[in-house]
Image (cartoon, rainbow, N blue to C red):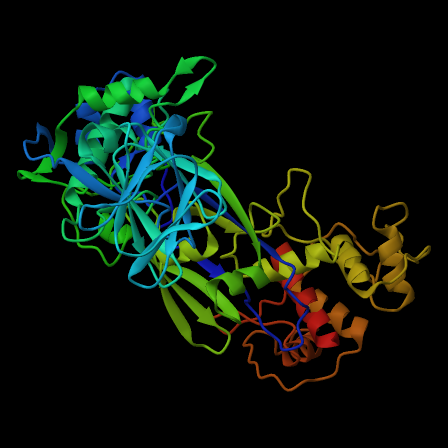
Length: 575
């Protein structure tokens, strides 16, 4: 099985100078696994398991550890489902299916309107009363005490439309209307729990294997029972805030002449009354789309939740190590999300972000808690759940965070410098798309990077005996003509030799005419080095720094990351 980092760190700005080159155009790339909160049943995983012959009972016992599927004797007769999610409407339209008549009934059981045909609407008259409006726009009844409910006189379905008159869904049962304010309303469908409510759940494609559909039906029934609110005006939302419910439209699904909805209705009927229990109690059977190979503990996915023994993260891979949810049709098994630094700060509501790190990860590797540190040294804590919500990520499972190059993660110390120089066409990657930040830089490569950073035009001649037709000859010539670079006593330049940290300091100092600055530094290993003065000048201007042990290591060869950081700081100094 793959292993993932439990802690990821985003070092957005390793070295900050107030006049540093702008980083606003940097695009951060987040790569992750899965779609959804990660708790309980993985729907794509259930499909994969069903395709491999597992029964729905086996599927459910895997995702909800220690539970049993049992027949429940106390299924309520009806359930109240708030339509349009948590949205309030300025008005809503209703119509009887096939021009069948509707009746609008008051709280005392008497008719406000009877035999209404066509598309009628309901709106608030006040914070406590409602009005019914005819298809022609005239008010048929006003100041009706709330709620009123609507039934189909012919026993057919009721079609509901939104405030602009666009069809929403069709429903069996009755529609209750409540004022949400003095000028808005919300609608509640009171419907038979079994089978009509479960029939109306659009949480899984009806074409999937029956054992996946059975598992979904039992999980959805359990979730609904565990979350009903008998004393409230509604039990559940019709959205992902609870469970997606689209009324009779679900079992009427057809395509290419096939009634796919009938398969879902069969799954509901075949599992009628079956629920998931733990120690005899019906559980809140959370589920989600795709897990990426591992589900999550509820208290780690939602830090405000209490741990539950049946909602623990579990591996979801087959015997060959392939996640059950990995499928060519599952576009959410893994994902990529890109965002600019400016938009990142805007969506998080935090300006001046210096770093982001995951301080607590779940058993799957999903982010549970993060710490966002600002340039002023203050920090903000955020749950992975909130981080995902603010950025619109598909999940909190992040396996890579980076930019242009797959081998330069956002946690890499020189990430912003490499990204900025790439955007200025000063550095570039290799043909395979990587940057190889730890590769050592040659004297020829450094000459090119320095020329590009300074905008020097290509030179045509130099006095070095070993440059000739070398690919970097124009850059070496440009620097040589300005007395920025020097060769060796034997007349060579040695363009393919690796450049040392000392040599880089010497060249940069000459290139921009550096004089001693005010930054403090102390290196224990340069006292007698030939480049001591140049190193000290570069360090005093914040262009180079040493190591944690107090050394500078002047003869160490410069890596592509170090050179990128040095040139970046040089440009910042020049600005």
